[in-house]
Length: 353
Image 1 (tube, rainbow, N blue to C red):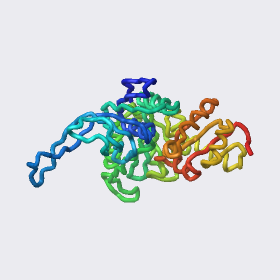
Image 2: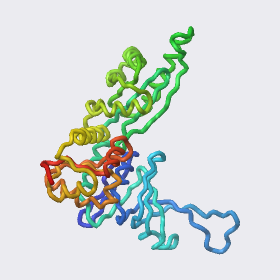
Image 3: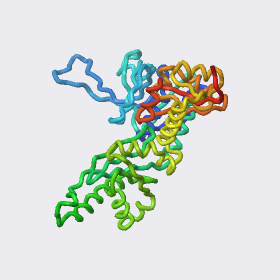
Image 4: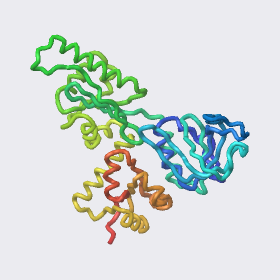
């Protein structure tokens, strides 16, 4: 993400999203009631009266401004859509006051106007800018002749696979078995290297295949082996990836990776709950009360709750009192656990009644 214009007095920040992670960040920075402007394409119908059957109109690209009424980010399609009332645009093509959906595009400037930019929103933009400079990690879980990849993204885990091989069991006599193993390993490696700027690779799984794969990397792909570690899990597939995250393995490797940090914070919270600590609050009512009393050392809030519960001022209050605010993605297991606690929780400085 890049900031191309910032006018604090007018409440304007213009950004250029460059990755899927940036769109995810923007889906939580933009709030209902904000104004957003960008280039858009809309199909304009012929109004001359000469329209023929089957005429679907002509696509026109122009600059459009909306007062936002709804924000939706679809993880699997990677699309961020802003729906609202048109406030700016060519009146000969679109009537002001009508509704339109603006799809936020990568590498296309987006101007966001707020009546007031809260500290957490500015902080989140800066986090997105810093994160875009950092490298990702890939978790590779191997079980028999099946590999599942988990690519660490800012919004959570993006899954790839399963990648299948054609390796027979050890008890079956197959003269091509070793050849098939190598072909499988190379297929997995091909999937790994297509991602740019991978800093760390965690090779995991329940059996010995992970160790064999690591040995193969050391022999044939030493550059990948140098950034790899091996981790044992009880399960394969996506469950294995979740195990790696819960162990904090990725956090140790890339301490600033947001997903790993969020998982670590949630696990710490659950640990405190498990031992009946008096210095925790969870649920909207308890947490808001703790914020008002200035008792919050760390606030954990689900990304979907920031706008729906109008938590901007409360989040600023925590930071003004030297507390930490962590917005947790709803797209990973830690976020789902926080959601089950009411969508927000806090580690307290002291016990409150």
